[in-house]
Length: 290
Image (cartoon, rainbow, N blue to C red):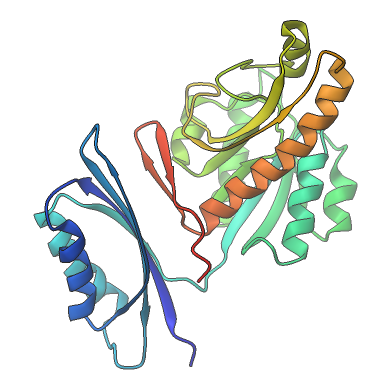
C-alpha cells in the first residue's frame, strides 16, 4: 500500500520553539516528516510553514482524530491551519471570454498530466471558444451576461460550480468584473491572470498603455481575485525585456507567452498546496521535489 502524504499549511505568531513543537507533535503521532519549509516575517513577527508528513500502516489515527489532536496544539499557539490528505484531485473550472492562449495551454497541460487536477468545465460568456473545450473533451457552458443580467448570471455560476463541487476557479482572460458577493463566495479560490505587471497598467488595454509609456519591461501577474479589482494577493509574476522598436501587437504577442507560463505556475502552486494567504500577500513555498 502506498504511504499517504499529508500536507499541513500553518501560520501563527512567531514564537520560540514553534518548529520543535510542531515537529515533535508529528513524531509523537507516528508520522515521518517528508519535507519542512518555513518562513518568518520578521517585520510582522509571523511564522509560516508547509509541512508534508507521511503515514504508514503503523499509524491508526483517523482524519478526525489527527485533526482533533492537532487543533489542541493549534489553540495553544494561535495557529491557523489547513490540511490536505493528497490523492484527491481538485476540481477546476476555467472561465474565458474571447482569448484562447491561456485556455489552450491549461487544457494541454491537463491532458499531459502536468497539472494534478480535474478540469471539470470551461465556462464562457461567449460561444467562440467552445470548439477548444470540445477538442479536449471538456464540458462547455455558455452563460452570456450583460450589466442588467450580471446578478442572475452569477447566481447560475454559483449553482453550477457548487453543484459540481468546484475547488478552484481560473479566470483565463474572462473579461468580466466579478461582483463582490461572487468573489466573497469563493475566498482565495479564484485565480485571475492580468496581462500586465501589476500594479502597473491595471484595468483594460494594458499593452496599448505600456506602448504609449515606452516601457522596457512587460509582464503578467496571476493573483487571487478579491473585491478590489486587480489588487488581490499576487501568486506569480513574469517579465520580459522589450525595446523602443516594440509595437502594441508585438507587446501583446510577447505578453501572451508570459501569461501562459505565469498562470500555469499559479494554478500549479494552488493545487499543490504551496500557498498560504496572509492579508493581501501570498506566501508561496517552492517545490521540494519530493
